[in-house]
Amino acid sequence: MLQPLKVYADRRSQPSRAVIIFCRVNQIEFEEVTVDLFKSEHLTPEFRSIILRPFTDFLSFHQVGGNSPSPKINPMGQVPAIVDGRFKLFESHAILRYLASVFPGVADHCAAGASLVQDTTYQGSPLSLGLGGVSPGSWRTCNASSCGRWFSIAARQLMTWLEEGSCTWYPADLFTRAKIESILDWHHSNLRRGAATLVMHTVLAPFLGIATSPEAAKQAERLLMQSLGTIESVWLKGDAKFLLGSPQPSIADLSLVCEIMQLEILGDDVRDRFLGAHDKILIWMDNVKKATSPHFEEAHELLFQVKAIMQSKGPAASPKLKITSKL
Image 1 (cartoon, helix red, strand yellow):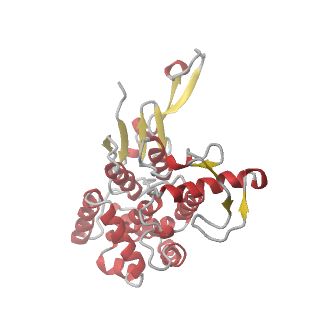
Image 2 (tube, helix red, strand yellow; image 1 turned 60 degrees about the vertical axis):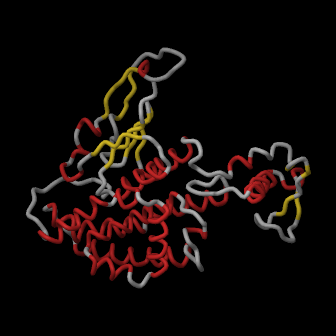
Image 3 (spheres, helix red, strand yellow; image 1 turned 120 degrees about the vertical axis):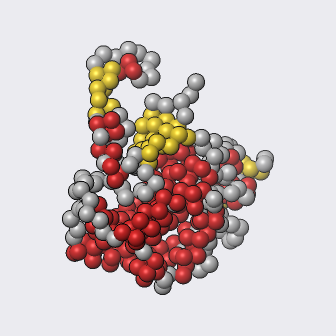
């Protein structure tokens, strides 16, 4: 009997919320295991320690002697992390990619069309493809012999268009998927770095009794503003409903919006100072919320509770904690 997927998370963590929302929206059965970051549960030996396990504990066709190092949950001491049977994984973007790829019907519905291109035909007719895009037009035509690997890529693109599939969370379309990957990579060193650092050094650190850095907060504020501008100017052009002009959200939409939601902790006035001038971002965030409702709202309930506590008490004199979380 297969063990249920386990998601180790703290809903005060924006990447944790993204994974939880993704599972809920896509009806992926899982057990949520709360790891309280404020209590440093992510740093306990039970969560992060490396233990030695015999190779024979793992699926193998041959018995191998010796021991194999294996993390109990996540040796990095961060959330989210998942355990899927004997498989363990951390880093939210890697988890989202894994879930979208492993669970049937989640990634997108265009992948089925690509499987029809086995002998450079579509419904019995030879394919002669253009390299100008995925919609009809005056293209420079090519075939398998003249264009090599580009023919298979173009064929996949054309099949996506012919089948009129609903490309969504993690599209099979190679070009679109690569662009989503670029957004996710950009996110870590830009939007996330700016938003998370600002929240930590202006609100969370004082609340938890941790030393703050005004200079780090200033740099984070500048990076956050630049990042919001980049999202609008590069990925939300025109009347785009979601990133890259997609009619449906991707894992990049979900990850970035959950990150921006963390600004709620700063209070309404400060949040509005950052987002008030970015109408496109506000509309986009609302679109993501609606597309993932009611799970989006449910996953963020704890965040708003934390916001209310911070607003009522202000910075608290708490014991200093060693925080290496992904808040």
